[in-house]
Length: 288
Image (cartoon, rainbow, N blue to C red):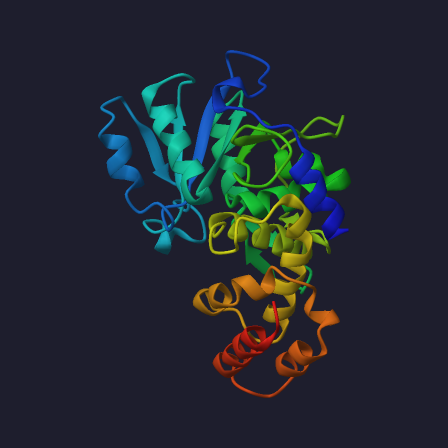
């Protein structure tokens, strides 16, 4: 299913931010910006010089102690210079999402409610849904729970991979498909069983997009095998970014599962950095 989901995302319509579909001019525009990926977000927004309605998303939640490092919630008029800068912040490094709603207070309350989700283990997890890959996974797997996921949000907009996909445009648009009417937030959101696996695959897609040159500027026809190979590296304890980038040219090759020598290295008990060196040696010894 994760392959079909990724293909669906790559085939989805895309938009410039100003041309995103929206229903009414009365809708409030909100942004959730990842300050871990955009540490200068507040200073960049302040420099615009327009009145700013911003606050820490984690304030007044169970995560208030880390509110200063957590995501930023911003409400701003459509077409403003502040909205343009927030759009750029989200697009850069895939650092956030935007959404529209009729009521800004309801929208913020729902955003805070959605931070904690039942993860299927009997416990709850912090849901970083402002990451474009996770939001896409949530939207694709919500099913009948879409009305709970979207709540009062009438649409969510997330940055699209810039190097992969059939369509042009930097943004994807998501709307709840349920015909039911939202009646308010209840118990915590139940994370569907397949969300984590799909998010992992979409997370690789966005990461490879960020490292596009390192991977040799692959086409859409290569991304499924690249992400399969990255999954296999992760399963065999190779997960550090610099290690993965060292192996980029090898990852953008045939599936590891079809290469017995590579599989023998991956399944060995060696330390991960030794596996990386061995894989690189194997690749350099292979005739071109």
